[in-house]
Amino acid sequence: MASRMSTSPEDLYRPEFVRGLFNEMSRTYGVVNLIASFGFCVLWRRQCTRQVEILPGEVVFDLMSGMGELWPAVAARVGHGGRLCAVDFSPAMCARSRSTAERLTGIDVELREEDILHNSIPDGIADVVLSTFGLKTFTREQRARLAREVARVVRPGGRLSLLEISVPPPLLLRWPYMVYIKYFVPLIGRLLLGNPDNYRLLGVYTSRFRDCSEFAAQCTDAGLRVQMRRFFFGCATAVVGEKPPIVVTRFR
Image (cartoon, rainbow, N blue to C red; front, side, top):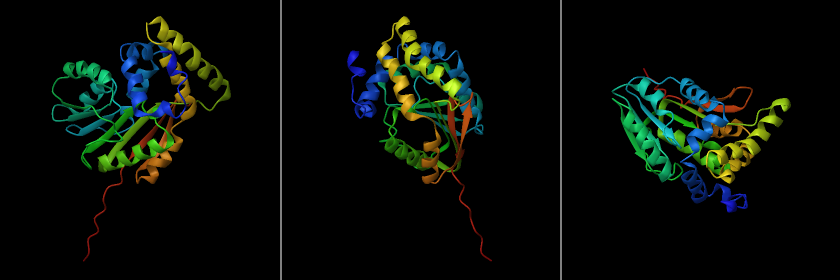
């Protein structure tokens, strides 16, 4: 819809706006991402799960879970005794992800349709927290709150890996990459019967987000031990690390 591109910068990050955006994109989101990224979205999701240890029987949370694209890889690693909890506030995306859950066997999948910044998740319940391609739709203040929520939800000794497309540092790559995201991806969206204005916002969000460096610092401030990692010359970045385990001191 034309009004999306005329929305004020502040409104772009309102939960109601972002929820509506993903509700509308849900029909074409998967195929546009796959084609527009030349398959890199699949590779980067795999790399997100491979950056941390995921053990059989563990509880894994997928934040801003979309259509459940991470779930097959997670299910293969946690096995029959594992549990997957997904959080997303878009009803349309959750509806699409339920079909993903139905294709998984031998794993308990819990889908929470709620805002990760205002959630009912118990403290310290997650062994691993994952997320892909959701960070850019938060403001700096919202990401700081998200970092605190991740620190609250993951248990001591638990791990995290959150990945997002980013602006690559090399100038020779940055210019064509951003032109492609801003102008060609919306064209692909239009060809696949999506709203091109929705996909134009991908460039807006990515330009403002830059990369995961600031979020890594926010995670550190929240008490997590993390590092930022770059993929494909910085076209994607991730925050990977752990919540420090509790050290028990014995007195003699």
